[in-house]
Length: 254
Ligand SMILES: NC(=O)c1ccc[n+]([C@@H]2O[C@H](COP(=O)([O-])OP(=O)(O)OC[C@H]3O[C@@H](n4cnc5c(N)ncnc54)[C@H](O)[C@@H]3O)[C@@H](O)[C@H]2O)c1
Image 1 (cartoon, rainbow, N blue to C red):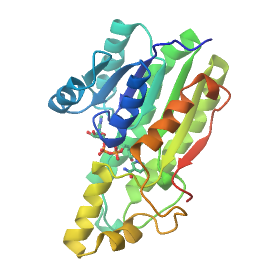
Image 2: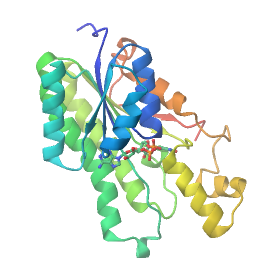
Image 3: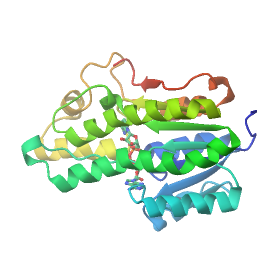
Image 4: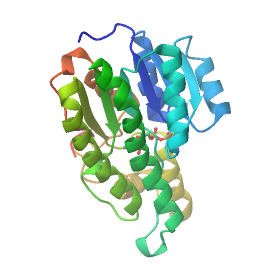
C-alpha cells in the first residue's frame, strides 16, 4: 500500500520533550497528529501553538479503558491510524533495596504495559487496512544498565521484546514495528535527574554528566530531540518499508 500523504499519527506522552519534537516533525510534513497525555491543561497549551492538524487527547496509557476510548475517538474522527509512536515515559531513581513497589509498578505500567495496550488496540485497524508503522521509544537502557534505575532498565529492555513480538505478528499485514533507543536528550525527564544530582549530591554538570549520563559515549554530547525525531520520522516513511524488528540507537556511539 502506498503511504497516505497526510497520515494520522498518534504520539503518546505528546506534551513532553521528545513527544513534542516528534510531533513537530510530522506536523511540518503536513501529517495529522493526535497527542496523548495525562493533563488536559498541558495538552491545550501545547496544541494551541501547533496548528489545526494537531489535537490533544487525555489518555492514560496504563488504563485499558482509557486507551480504548481514545483509539475509538481518533477512529471516529479520522477513520484510520497510520503511525503509532509509543513515547510516554518517566524516571525514578533509587537503590533496589530502597525502591518503592509503587514506583516499580508505575514505571513498568507506563513504559511497558502502555506500549502493549496501545499496540493491542491499534493493531485491529492497522491490520484491517494492511498498513501501519509502530515506533516504540525504548532507550539505550534497553540494552544496558546503570545503577538505581531498576524499573526503567527493566521496562526499556521489555520494550525491545514487545517490539520484536509485535513485528513478527504484524509483518504479514504490511505493518512495521521498530524501537528507537535514544541516548541522553535534554528533556524534562533528564533535566530533573541532573538537577537532583546538582542539588542533592553537589555535583557539577560535568560530574553529573559522567555519573548519570553515560560515561562511554563516543561523541561525548547530549543528543538533540530533533535527532531522535528524524529517526522516528524515517522509520514511519515509505523508504523504511523493509525495516522491521530493528532496535536503533540514536545515542552518539554507545
Ligand atoms: N530524555 C532522555 O534522555 C531519554 C533518553 C532515552 C529515552 N527516553 C525516552 O523518551 C520518552 C520521552 O521522554 P522525555 O525525555 O520526552 O520525557 P518527558 O518527561 O519530557 O515526557 C514524557 C511524557 O510522558 C507523559 N506520560 C507519563 N505517564 C503517562 C501516562 N500514563 N499516559 C500518558 N502519558 C504519560 C508525561 O506526562 C510527559 O508529557 C520516554 O519513554 C523516555 O523514557 C528519553
